[in-house]
Image (cartoon, rainbow, N blue to C red; front, side, top):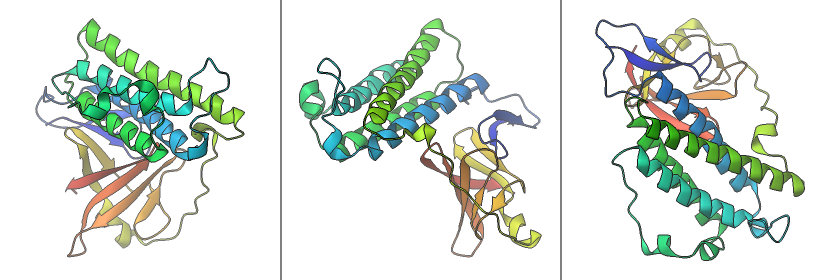
Length: 254
């Protein structure tokens, strides 16, 4: 069976693993995986930005006519649900809190706003992974609207952060990492194919650099992998750390 994969050398480019049968139509195709990737990048940057801004600054806005930081956070949550519901049959169950006015929601505590924003992005992740192929103009328009909205609001919140004397997440330098020496026998159990989501696999080779017995990093890209072992000591999965998110994956085969 053909599978979609993110090769760990780059951790961003999808490819197809060799197989015998044609691609399963239920899996996202390569075009959809690119939309998923960019939503992951900008969504994670937004969460990191809002999380780094002090709670006392959520009422900040550069001019009286502009939106406050808190207002932008609650607006993004609502926009994410509204747009991603158009991608398929998945619906977000509304609660009484959702019907409150935007100005009221904008004054919610920082932790509440960030958690709700993260939940809306997870909803969009699931909705996008359920799209089989990008075939209709309406679907393409919705995806472009969703990702453009994320990018535009990240640009907006980045400008606010710079005015506050802060550095946006995408402008921060990568953390310096130092590789350690490990014997080949210690590395071979990690090699295999791991499933991040249905149809989305991560192929792990020896082209990762160890910084501990279980933590590895890729050179040239800000991505790390932590391997997980079961009760018997065997490698059973991993956690991919990229774009500010931690995505677990089960090991499917060696």
